[in-house]
Image 1 (cartoon, rainbow, N blue to C red):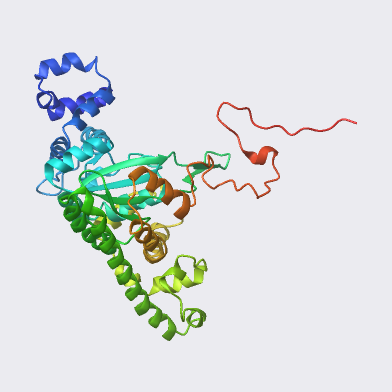
Image 2 (cartoon, helix red, strand yellow):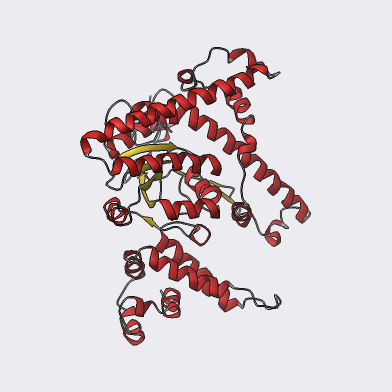
Length: 422
């Protein structure tokens, strides 16, 4: 509470909320931190920009480059960064500088006012949490942290996110203070909506920055066109768009198939005759790995994204206790970026050919309603139906050799094994 009040006073938020500095001090004891954040969020992107301006002022290096930021200044910056995340609605907001609505109706109002379509992210967990689902964490580091892409999102869309379900977490405790805390499943999807909330397109999972922006650009243009049309003529326009996108995917796949057929790999002989529909059922990992190699050069991470990745790695002082030299830490970090690029290329081709093509097919068949369509995507594409409380992690036909399969429901004692008495 104290630190948030210090930041609020530092930024003069009292005047922004229509209060004098004295009134702000007097009322701060009565208002919770959440109320302060909510008051700022109601002001929208303008409040976020004022916070970012103050952050930049505090974080500005001295002209001679020699003076260090004091410990007190670092504390203020750290608290301000946390406040910015909450006001912007996204972890890592200092890098992305994006404002996210969490109420779709409010996003519609803003979209109508600004004549922009909506980009609605559905995910497991919350975008403000470190441990949201894996895809959303990669969005924050490889997409939203990209300055060019972030500027495009600010200029062309009203941003919104909503959790589909809580994100499953797993903790491995080594018993001596060391722990690994990760999420173990989850998928996310970006929907492009008209300003009044009609589904235009959906980009499932992770894409490379270039492909992501190209896909959004195409859908954004259609969203604005469709949004200006009478309700009765909208679906015909959407059918035309999705059929055209399927034709473009067919053409891209034909070009990639020809390259694979010419390659000296075991997969070459298996691709002849494969259609786009076949890719929706393709499960062989080697196939997707070979296809991803054709597009690896398309995936480029900008310096800001690389910096965001490196900032999350162990600090040199802490890492030095686990590795012999700093270079031992740096080399794995470089390999980590290379591996990440490989994984993004793999996700991009698989999401586009196998998942996005199915979304194009669904959206060109019948008009859809946002929430019902999202449920279908999670159930049939991501294999995480809302009706399954275990989100696909506990298949009923898999034996775990544990009482009740090791499943524990809230407010229920853990299952106990019973031993028959003779």
